[in-house]
Length: 214
Image (cartoon, rainbow, N blue to C red; front, side, top):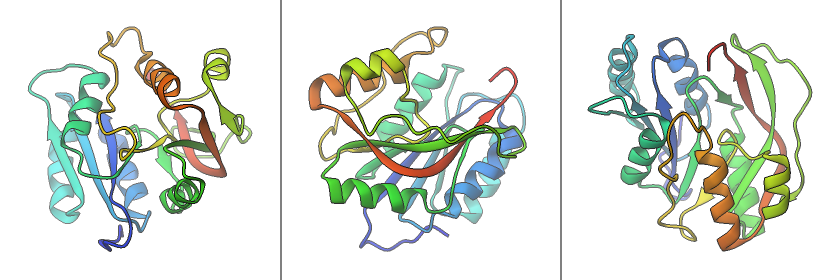
């Protein structure tokens, strides 16, 4: 289970959820397996399935799980920024409800960041089917992504990104329409303009689920 050890920096894991009931146990288990000092903030965007009921049940079992429910359906930008507002961790990590991480993800990537004096990093990952079966090749990206590569490749998403808030305490996603679906691209673009390139942690650490209508 996630370690309460104060020797490790606290990581706030940000997960927006809308009708992701069928994935919630998997994503929470993915965080449980990290064996790290974490809080997992899952913001429910007024789901119409049993997501909220399940989150309340799981939060009684896992003290590091913090479910939050929005008052009205507002989209993933509002959900992520609400979680960031209440996050207490030095590091922010982003994990959508239908995706998951490998068990050593946080320790590997944060050790890399601390050793590299790196404020924002990403890792390798693979696509998987909705049921979690591995498909496709390992996606590696470049070792360093600056402004031009970011705009040419649009490689950086949310799944593997980890951000050190000691360098960017006011980070949040730009307030764009949910239909635009570019809030993460714009957020990383703004960050790169201010602070420089994003570094690749050269390990396969996450799984992006290919889900119909996701």
